[in-house]
Length: 218
Image 1: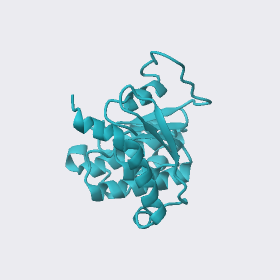
Image 2: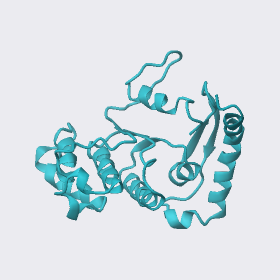
Image 3: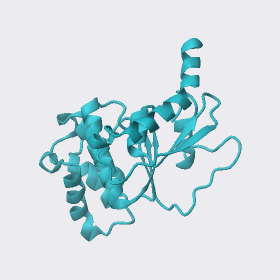
């Protein structure tokens, strides 16, 4: 995480090989499959929720054809959308659409999952539900996730390590180890003193750049 414009999304795009670093080197070890979740859900509007998930499962080289339907059903059940599976994206809420995006991202069984502020457009209550879902799916699959966010509490809730970037031109300001036990209960986590302590630590790291942006908005 870091201030707007410091290069967080660019870093994800470089990891995904959608852009090349202008200087230096970036290496990703032993990764054969990447998946990326953006701020917008990117669902096919002409497909039902089930068909949106099935499209990626069916086209994944890691999934045998005989198992496609079973995997689709399991993913939809995992994100609580089984009874909404035959609806189209415009017929469900933004939170439900983002749940489909989560299911799709795990459907391809990626070695690394890149997430670019995926929950920025949902309300607080929906965000809590999505945090619970992401933590549970991560716990079950143990995928590597690189997650970009402006939300300090979101970062502390989800992360093992938080890379704090400075304002543009972004450089590594600090790496904060989030030593909170797993599995995590999102509701109970927020009550703990250790959670608040890490939130405050990251806030203090970001405060100078945030104050600078307020004082010099140009």
